[in-house]
Length: 409
Image 1 (cartoon, rainbow, N blue to C red):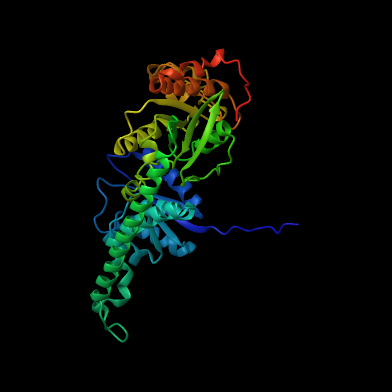
Image 2: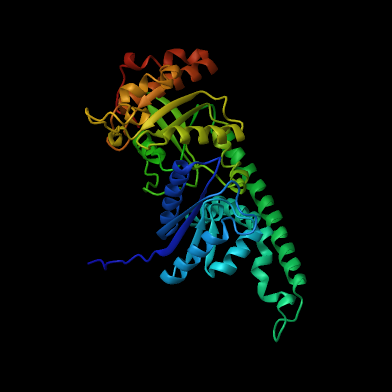
């Protein structure tokens, strides 16, 4: 008999701002995502705080009055962590910690922390460690407040800033070593990619938690790790897949997210070589998410950053089994109909129509329209293959004309 396990979550409050770049609705959406990130990291959100500001306060990010409200709540409810939705400067973080007297984390470090939890292989761990050190370097002074000369007194005399400089040098040396280690691993992985022969390469890309790993498990009959949390997949997984009699390589990559820390984009660029070198991208989208169009825009932005935007793309709208359009009562004359009320058929007649037949609507968990998905992938991979090797045309007939054993590997 298994013993019941009690999971203890760290209590936290979330803090965000409303400004010209993100209105109240957008700010709420970001805080929803931040709450999911907090849950993924092992925290429980007790309360949210929002403030309207044209620009963040240079010293404390939010105004002193709002910060005092946060301090009172943190003190009264013994909150362990305050999490800010935007990246804090080292000075802001130091000032806020003095006032709140609790752990202060921003969105960037929260994502880095989740990546550190999720990294399983040496390669992923090295990439995350590099990103963490690059984030930590400008913030080292705050870690040595116990050695500041200004405070004086017994036990407070000593090297002070010299100790900080020593630590900075150690961190810089560590960053240099990690970069060298990544270069070595990159060379090894480049050789591995070169040894894969002439098979067509297909990469799954998309926002985090849209079902890429689930779809990979369905099409490749593998057992990639799946969990309803953000960044369940960090380590790139490559599988050989055969549809009908046509083999190709399918890669599952790390999910993207809005406001992705620049340190992670830089350190994970080598992992994303799999995307950059792919012949075809399957852009998986969670259509049941109310802001899936923003997710598409975020993913396209990161694809631009890694020079992978010009590749052939099939848009795969997943989770159609969970999609439910909002409804309006017949006698409701106040609510104006918007895209949130569109059915799937109506969505297909919007900008999606301009994508031609490179748009699919599926459910990976319920296996809805998976046969249509297989057919589209087969035909697209086949076109890429026979363009590269025209003499192989006879080996791979049209999908519906295939008469061989339909049981795939």
